[in-house]
Image (tube, rainbow, N blue to C red; front, side):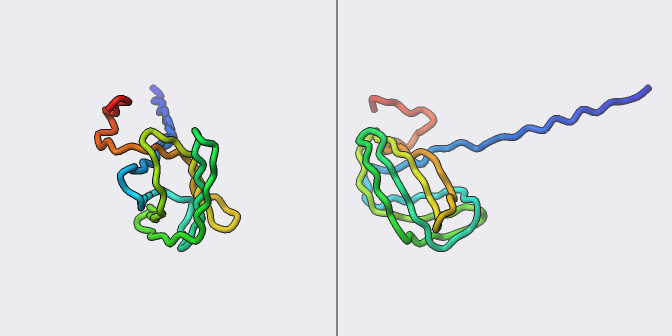
Length: 112
């Protein structure tokens, strides 16, 4: 009797949204970049206002595959943003950001 082994490969993509806090002016962001760098440029586009803002030469801290940096921006509750982090010409991370002060994001309520 022949035994057959079936191997399934699953590719999971970790999808997360960057959370920005309206109650704080200094935003702290942690991402999983494509590679480690010391300085990054952040391009952030407000989807509701169709405005774009660029933050150059942000200092980063790289630890165990995560890249953390800070930037100063005041955001309003419920705003959504397109988010791109790059160095020179190479994109390190692209995603979305959402502004909320709620802490229980699994049970997020739009009217709270």
